[in-house]
Amino acid sequence: MSCKEYAEKIITNTEKVIKGKRKEITAAVAAMLAGGNILLEDVPGTGKTVLAKALAKSINCGFKRIQLTPDLLPSDITGIHFFNMKEQVFELRKGPVFTNILLADEINRATPRTQSALLECMEEKQVTIDGENMKLEPPFMVIATQNPVENAGTFPLPEAQLDRFLIKLTLGYADREQEGEILSEAGYSHPIDSLEAVVSGNELPQMQEEAASIRVNEAVRDYILDIGEATRTHPSVILGASTRGLLALKRMSQALAAVEGNSFVTPDNVQTAVRFVLPHRLICRGIKGKDLIEEIISRLKAPTE
Image (cartoon, rainbow, N blue to C red; front, side, top):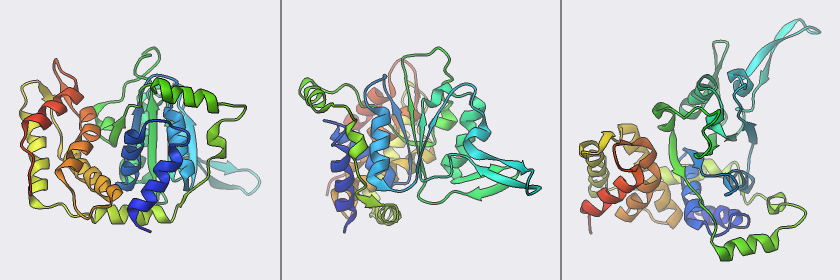
């Protein structure tokens, strides 16, 4: 089965519980194929946690959830060595980070010290406990959620941590027709309870390898470079896209091409990917990151055949 077929199965399965958000679901699946982490930012009740759970349940692999709070300690995420009085030895009690898909709910409610405990896991795919490095079993990714409206008792993510998220997604409210469908289907149990896996955990690394092998020709590579340069030279930009940001843009573009069943990246893939990959990495003055990206896309000449 091809990467496109696997991706379509995950998207279709997730759409059973997240109505009318195919574009956002496709972007989330592409981010998984690119081996990246996802930040879901939206107001309460729009389906952030449900989307994360639905993606995890669609893939038959390990899944754990952390509800982040100000009193949570880094060791509550990574784990600790404790002394077993009966055996008279120190033993490792692994934290929830030892899984395949980790849902970090309301990440901006954790203190900076606890937030930083996730940095090594997200970037290096490893954990350090008492000076001992432990690799996390692939595949591993973090799906984090945050509420942008309520600021009391929150700790905004610093730029260094935002840069670790491959994409940032906003679901928004469902339209009237889709909301009516959700109300009609709502019963005693949540639809996600009956959701079953459609892809095994062993197949995800194969999909990621296929996505990474998608060809990026020189013209498309230069287009990515042009976008990066435009974010750094724009008069309203304080901090433009980093090299890591452009690498993320390339990986996301390859993953989107794989989802479409293409063997090469098109300028359209880059234009779709950049709307999810770069806005949260930019620091702008007097303009939102997403609006600046739209301006750059409309101004730059895309390569043609």
